[in-house]
Length: 245
Image (cartoon, rainbow, N blue to C red):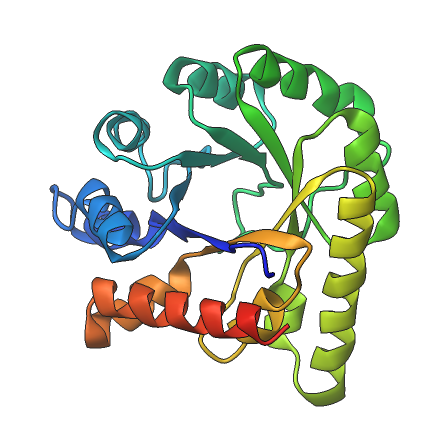
C-alpha cells in the first residue's frame, strides 16, 4: 500500500503580490487558510534576509492563525535562527540564500559546512523544531545531511522540472536515487522547487518521498482558476502519481 504523500503549499508569492503595491491585500495568511481548506497538509513560507515577500509578522500570524504545520524556510544565520526559535514552527528548512537571486538557485552545500551549520541545527532542535536541509540529489550532500544531524532533506527538483526529454528522465533518476539513499540513512525525504501539473506525477510516484512543497506554480495558476481549484488539481495529480507506483 502506498504511503500518503503530503502537500506543503508555499504562499511566498501571495506576499510578493501584496508587496508590489503595499498595503495588506492580498493577505498571505488568508491564502494559507484557504490552502488548508483546499487540501494542503502544511504551509511553507520563506522569510528572506531582505524581506522581499514574507514578513516577520506574516510568520507569526501563520503560526498563530493557521491550523496546519508551518515549514519555516530560512538561511542558516543567527538572525533567522533567533526568529525561528521565537515563532516555534513545526519545521525549519535551511536553504542557501543570495540577496541578488530571483529564487533559490541550488541546494545547500552541506558537505564541508559542518562547523557553520551544526550549531544552528542544534539550536533549532533544542526547541523541538524539526530541521530539514534543501539539497541537490547528490550522494555526498545527502550523506553529509545525515552526519550533521538533520531530521529531513528536501530534494531540489528544479533541474528535473526545467529539463526536457532524455535530460528530464536522467534528472528523475537522480531524484529516485537520492530519495532511496535518504530513506536508507533514516532521513525523511521531501522534494520541491518548480513542480507543476506536468511534472508532479512522476515525482509523486517515488515512494521514498513523503512530502512535496509547491508554491510559485500554484499561486500563478490561481490567477486563472483560483487558488482552491489550483491546489485541488495538484492534490489530484499527486494522488494519481502515488497510486501509479
